[in-house]
Image 1 (cartoon, one colour):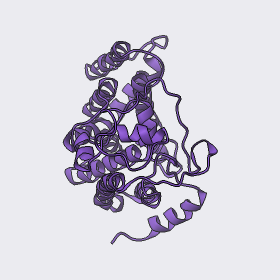
Image 2 (cartoon, helix red, strand yellow):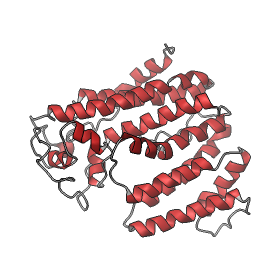
Image 3 (cartoon, helix red, strand yellow):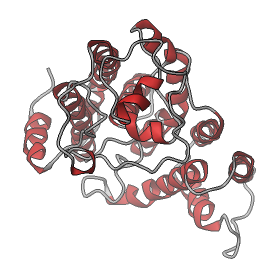
Length: 318
């Protein structure tokens, strides 16, 4: 299991009430399709932004109460069902606009100067999902929003730290640049390690971005060494471990701070959320165990982890 803010959507989950499954699927479809416009394929930035603008126009059309899209309209598969879900459940439009804003940012922004910038991105790319779910559950209030925001941001940060190597290949770095500087490193350290460089890379060993990741072959990381090769003997140096320990600690604190929400949501809904949070925490444990060596391994959860997660989720909150 990988922790990702869309893969953790409880689509068609047996723990999700049947009455909400169609609505969750409609919201997921919107988020997934918009994210794909920003990330997938060979389109250039201008073309991606134009396509996302049609989503913005469609949201405005829903807000005006316009008639549903005809079946032959290119947006009908996404916005036909979504408009019905928004009306039936009286969902606010702002979370959908926030998601769209984040996807537009994905097209043009590939580095974050500091933590406030990164958290602002998470506020728009991850937190709207949790807020929409609370509206569907009838549990939308200020206290629950705060916990949901912490969980969603914590899960997204977990996904970022889990996928440092994969994101590098996409020319994206989510670790704040001032955090690199604080620990005496540069983003180019990631590229040099992926190319087999030694662990002891200092702040002046490479350019701002290291080797250009654009156009590189994608890497496929799992719990096994990359490409099936034997693990190298060198491990990330102390500066990298210190940097990642700081990032992992932030994600862990956010997930734990949101945990009280799992006790406020009824029955299966709360239990599923608790499993998701513990899944994120377990990924962070994996990162700790790997000494943050995401250059050779992508930490994932395996079958044997599920019994542990189930046991942890069944325990009462402290």
